Length: 543
Image (tube, rainbow, N blue to C red; front, side, top):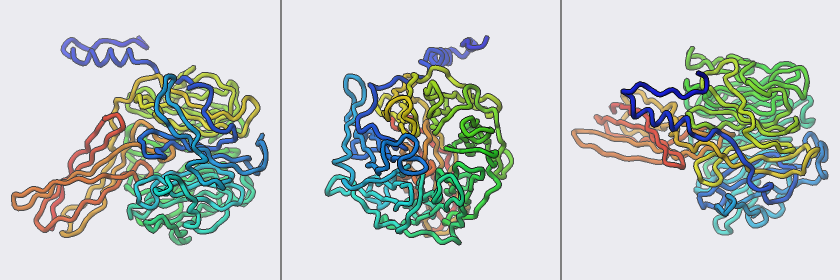
């Protein structure tokens, strides 16, 4: 019967315990921590989780602005630019995790911007994360570097080309396979959601955190009206990072990478949104376990601006060997015609596939929504779990899923802004009450080197690893490359960390080996809770 847990055959008695355990696990759900987070109650556009001070706890960066299309519109308190807010996690107290506003101590005092988003990555190779900020309304973009002597972030925007754009988003990833993160800023154009739009900018890193803009020959960007995000992902499965520029106009721009940051523009492979679409967010992940990236599109179809449906586009690369997508209009079973602003993907029920959390802006009752993934893409495969979040009369512009209290359950953090018709701009944390993460990261693809390999030559090895959360390039997986070199009966073993290079890809260099050797290598991946997976071994001869 539906909903019942049936025992397995008697011969499989050990499985009975596991099956009954799964049946008795708490269902996914979220309860609010206190009555909002500390810090000023101002318009927040985005929230980015990362360890800002090196204590292994998850801190929260909120990027703030006063305006949507222009300064002061849509319920903004004024036209004044705002400082970002940096909340430091001080660990758990009696009521849960405790956050302290350390903005004045850790961010530049004169950093007043209309910020829309941020990318957090180590741009200069010193082992500490830095912050690239997307700034709106024709302003200069910003870069903050961690200063270990002062123990704070300092403004290093002079390391960027001096261009002023209207940016809603910035993405990061190692686009040219040199081991350091490059940056892509989206430009919405001078009139935001009206023509002529603006061109995305790709900046290449020299390895020391200084950036130069790529030429039009390398990155042939075209105008995009109301560009929203620069998604850095491996869309075509070749283990280099491509660029997808989405936003509130029909055509989603796809830039295919040749592996050395030479891009080809494709405007037809990703399905075009219907007339009137206002895509605020697209998230990319393997939703059905077939080894390619599927897309979850917000506000893709529908006749009215405020009544637009979310859809899924299923990638058919693994089935056909060719990058192509199938539009699944009725993928969401539940409320799907509401004014929303962001997705976050999380394995909320710990069954090994990613579920979809939706941040709701203004549609009453304004509660965030959780859709459970059946694991097989098709009509109604994302089913709303009603009552997963408490009702809060607020307007969520952004959301991230991250474990802020270290209990193995993924929590939700929301950034509030734009609509103050219900409550003040009160950013919130919802603690997860469902099952803890017991599923190891999924190593979906690893570089396969041709055999034989030339002697004395090292090689770049990449791995695509998807864990229990996927959100705007953030990951907390630790990966390693392991190898054995065998020659004349002698073995030499080694390993190296594989840092995250964006888009859930990890990279390390396989060292050179002498002629006549055989190299075997594999990848391991572990999450913060000790769940670990290991890839199959690959072997190559060296000539």
